[in-house]
Image 1: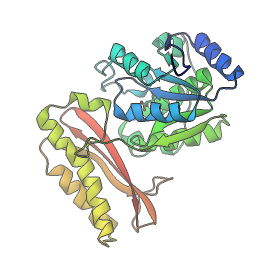
Image 2: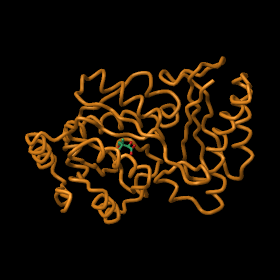
Image 3: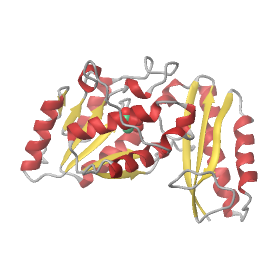
Image 4: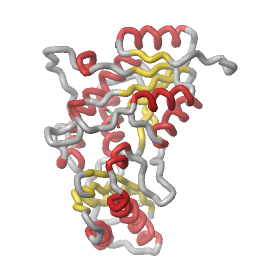
Length: 288
Ligand code: PAF
């Protein structure tokens, strides 16, 4: 290629990925990893572009991780448009796509899991028991295989990025975690692979998640300081939409995710709701 980058390598074998990454590092290259479950959208592409801009060798992992899905969740129907994902990675100049089989990531008889206490059991963790154990375990494995200098995650999964940062600190993993802003559709809907499940009518209802967050931001900007009242207004807005069922609405501490009664200079608003069968999450950092 004219820019000196090679062809995209698509690898399913952890040892081959490790060899490719180590060869790059021997050439003095800085390695970036973007862990994904595929069905790549502009949010993922923004992570890949950040990795491309900051690193010399970019690995994207595409793996729909069974251990982070509950028994009644959407593991089987989760979109897997591999050819389109590979085309997107080629276009963005990715060096390696790691696309392992489940058996490669969870060898028969696997008995080891990673659990981050505290953060794993509140909000998303309370609604999806075992989810964060699955996330922490697979991210540890993906970082072990790809050995990146920097790993990229989206702010869209706010609790997930907090948990991964905590886990990397606790396990002394030699990787820097970069969190990139949520990418939104022009009308505010946060990009998500699960948006593909929404009918046009459901998509209109789904807009209520970002609208509830913007409502909180606007009330604070107007000087309102009553957080319980703001939370209630957010919930009322969500519940006023057809087919929306709220899992949680909160305004909390941006690091501990403890729910706040009094405003802080920096806070985060988190929302999770189902639109019919589709479960969506969103968040916004708030300032006073
Ligand atoms: O955010 C995701 O897509 C997944 O939770 C991750 C980090 C790739 C782990 O499977």
